[in-house]
Image (cartoon, rainbow, N blue to C red; front, side, top):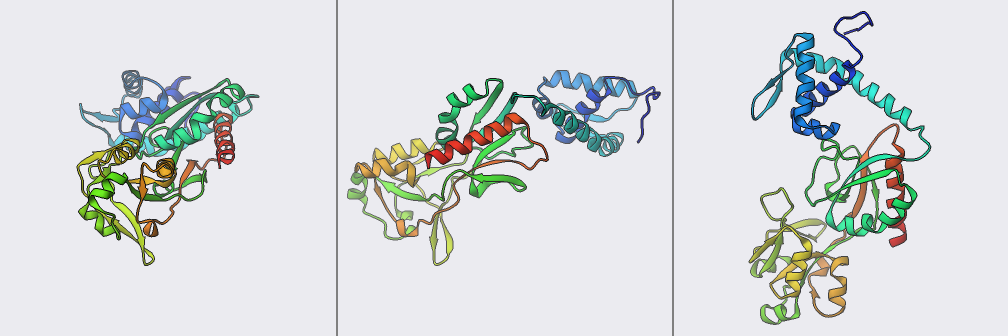
Length: 310
């Protein structure tokens, strides 16, 4: 497909129309595309409809529940998406010549990572980069960083997406079963991970998943999963740890988080011989030829803060 200035189908605003169409065509959702573009779904729908009216071809099939491409839409998307991406990148690279970082940096982070690596840097980051807006989503759900429109994410090593640059922020960590002395006095101490099947365990569920997390141990060179049971399921690890301190049952906690309660006798660690370290928090971001100054400033600040904390 080639266009010329004399082409009656093109006008000065058609890049915006094409960009809107490509966003919807790739997401197959006006809501997700509108969020990525920073507009409302209704405004985005009107832009795409105006474009369809101008060229006289329907590009999208719309229902109340779904969006799909027509044959003409599939053909147009296949041919113009690379050009729109290239133009957008060219404009983005031109903006890199700004003297100071600016704009919005969208970040998705697990709750524990937010407390460790983002909350402490906020005052210094604000002073150093007053023109950068940090848009931080604190959530334990594992989302597709790029598809959801985030610039960066902080993830545990076991759930890092493919094709992402992953910078470790801490040494490997491990999870350990912990319980209050009063619980152990009543129920006894497990001597093997499978013994937990006979205990009241406080289970944790990843947000967005139906089943609780299976506790993972290491035995004879291989990981062992134990599907524990118990009276409480939560999606907050802080709540699980507090419930263990209160004697509700056995929690499976990151050792760093439980360290103080173990040190002062409120909790007892168990089965440590089966608790193997695994990759801890990583700062993740998509591979890209040119990075915005704002994102680079955020990455550098988080890495410096993590190094100071270790």
